[in-house]
Image (tube, rainbow, N blue to C red):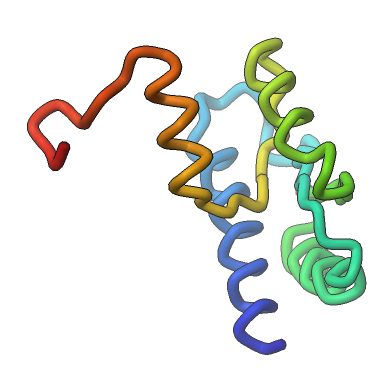
Amino acid sequence: MKKKLNNVMCKVLAGAMAVSMMPAVAMADDEVTLTYCTWNENQRDSIQATIDGFEAENPNIKVELQITPWGEYWTKLEAAATSGNMPDIVTNAYKPDRALRKRRSNGFHGRPGGLR
């Protein structure tokens, strides 16, 4: 459980760092809202506890948790990426067989300069 919580915290912090590296669009006192998308309803409480702690230490950054069922998650992310509306933070699980099939169906058969 602690390992999962640490993993979640790393992702939340990575998203916050990404926002902090953006060009100075918002002033220091402006509120920033990040969206965190995941599929695991069973982790809602631990993720929300991590978000609450993060927000307490960063009062100008709010994190909106969006939980989408597994069966719809990847379709939602693909649609979001296609439309340019990706969440700021996503839970990602690498599915090598699925990813490789998709890449190959799009004409990709290896990594340039890498393993094939």
